[in-house]
Length: 587
Image 1 (cartoon, rainbow, N blue to C red):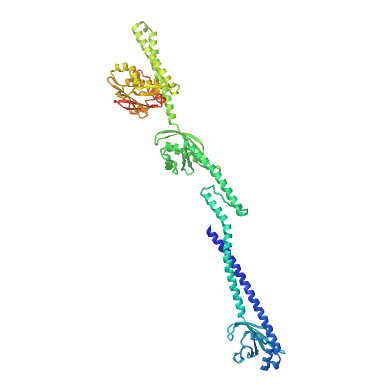
Image 2: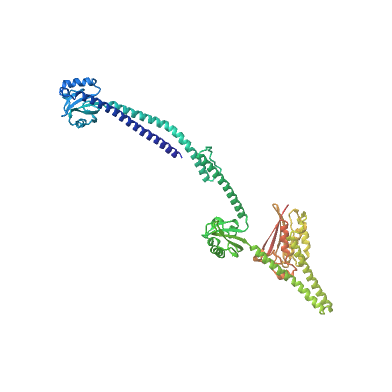
């Protein structure tokens, strides 16, 4: 803006200088012409007066009389007077001896006078050494022009006057420029300062500093412009605040959504993804934004549906399987993005991960099948032996007793199964209240081991209890913890061959208590480990059924541990044994 101020100042000063220069030139010319006109008229009158006085023949031809008559009419020598005959010979000159003067027949003013006109000429006089003005009038005798009277006067005074006027004009111009520079600088500053202020605010607005305002109180057009800029800045600030708030809300919604959201442009490039998509696709957002969806999604099925939505502009829903970074089942909604003109400009894809839902559905189906299978076996046995008894086997007392014992065992097994299912349902729904109390862990482990001692002894299993650790007290629900230990120990006894070993460890680790049940049993295949906590899932179904298990023990253990805010894990090698580890917080 400084350049504009300098340009404005120089422009105004240039205009002032030009106006002054033109006016000075005009007035100088007018003054010079006025002086010249006055001098010309003076010389013309002087010449005519002399011509009237000497036009008589006796005077014009007599040089002594001529000189006397001229001196009578013009006694002073302020004006140079020259009388010339028609041949150009000087008859009289009041400033020089006529003998010294050359013939004037070629002088322009003389030639004009001989033609009957008043001759006027300006030129440098070699005789006097400066510019002169010459005015010549004819001397008429009757009807004949017999000569001319020429009057001349130096133009030195006029030239000096005009030169002085030019000096005064230039001095005035210089003073005017100095004063004008100061005045114009102040004026230009007063004009430019509001513009600079408006420019500053406009630049700040482009840099998103919407709180900037123009501090001008003027009532003129500049003030109106400043008011308009301030209103625009205030409106922009409010709009950008609303846009920022909407963006924050949208970003918050997208960031915290468990469903994935992808926006694909009409050029089939990914323009927006939320963190859920990054998790589903296993790729950071900055690596896939800007790429083609077929390249970034790594799923032909998903890309095929996106292309279909882009091409047809229809909204639909499909179930898609993806296999990278892991196999997942997605419920995907495809919808075209319509802009404010009603034109389709892309596709919005919403992905719901239903892998767990499908897994739970499968587990539910398996659960129903397993329950049906497990219930059918004892019911079939009870029904078969009952029918056998009713058909006449009751007559044989020993056979009857054996059949009734089998019916009793199967009924007991059926009862345990139903009881475990009900207990598991209550635990899952957290309908079993926790009664927290200080529990001596070593005593509880010893009590649980005593319950299954007879089972272990029948299989000649050795059991090692925790030793060396001082008494460990834990704030927990005693019944829940005892049921956990009983189920783990029963499981270890059931799957450990005769002569095997079972080891129980209990130790503190920081603010947690770690309980371990280690056996030297048949172990668990690696592929079965993720599923052992499912209902009715058995690694060795025949052995489990022979042991009287229901397949619900580990599922109950898992939910009881979770109710106590703990964690359970398993490590196992097939044929070498299994280790169950329960970690509980020591409150």
